[in-house]
Structures are given as structure tokens and as C-alpha cells.
Length: 256
Image (cartoon, rainbow, N blue to C red; front, side, top):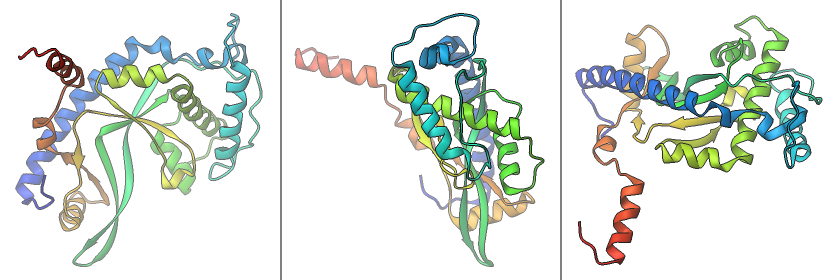
């Protein structure tokens, strides 16, 4: 889609994007809740997770060592946490939070450069639930929020756990991609090397021209902007299973 839009088009697409994002997120939450047992950290760490039950998990020691290595790498900067992560790790409930992915964009406008916080409404960070939200964590790191060390530690640990689950259990990615989500690992410039697993809808959003972004964010009374739906990506949406099946039929000289 062209980056050049009229303000009226932007307003219309903004409302449309918000409605589609809400529908997609509700669908995602329902599907994740249905497969929540697959996200149990004990599947990865076995008896290294505090529990009254016992689970023998192959490679649990190696998985713990990898988790400890990741946690030690991300905990100190910018979170000022102790890098040690001892076994057993506290029990982690398989309940989830979802956050729209956001990034900072330097927009060039008539009056100079503006730092704009841009959200991508069809891409979500998936995280185990904690008392801190992702925005709260950003506030703590930037000095605009009150710091609770244990809440920071809990968020960072759970982000690392989610990353290691997807890294060590590839069937999770296969399943979600079968449901038409794109799975990625992203990092935020504000939050150091902490990895975030993101799930994206099968169609895209985009950021229009800098001038339009700066104007829209200014009219909203702040420095934030939300990407808008690329309608063409919806029109061009394909079905991987259908495409694969057609290819097989073609090899057998079957026309549809």
C-alpha cells in the first residue's frame, strides 16, 4: 500500500485497523487458552520448577543451564538484577498477557525530527502473566515508574522462559504457524537483549509517511502512533495448506 494517504483515509483506516486488531486478538487469546498445557514450563525444566509433582524431562539439566545463561546475560543491564538463577525456579502459572509490539521511530517533519512511539496492532508479545505489564517495565527502566525488584525479576524470568520454550519445543511454532500466526523473536532498544516472542496475524500493518505520522501523533496530543492495516495484504492472503494440496494434485494431473 502507498505511504501517501489523505488525513481522512488515515482516520478511516485507523478505526478499521483497531476493530480488526481487537477481533484477531480475541481469537488469538481463545486459541492460546485452548493449548495452554503445551506452555507448561515443567515440559522444559521438569523438577527444576518448584512443584509437589515429579516430572522426568529429557535434557532438563541442559535446558536449565541454557535458561540460566540467557537470564544472566539480560538481567544486569538495564534491569539491575542479580544474574544468578537458582533451581528450583518458582512455579509459573500458564496464564498469559498480550501486548502490542511497539518501537521508536524518528520521523522527519517540517519542523524537524520527532521521536514517535509506534505500535504494531497486529503483532503481539506473548508473556506469562505477572504483576507488571510491559509498559510498566519500560517505565521502570526509563525512570518514570516505581521499581519493585521482585516484579522486575518475575517479568524478565518469564520472558526468558517463553523464549526458551519456543527455542526448545519447535512444535509450538509449527502449531501456531498452522493457525496462521507468524512467530518471531524481537528485542526492544529500551530493554537491552531481553528476547520477546511475538505472534503476528497473517496480514500486515504499515507506517505511512513521516509527515503524516508526525501530524497524526501531534493531533493525538502526544508522541505515539499506531500502524494501519495494509488492506492489500488481506486481499492477497493465501492458505498454505490449500497451496500445498493444489501442488500435490497438480503432480497427479488433477485439475480443480
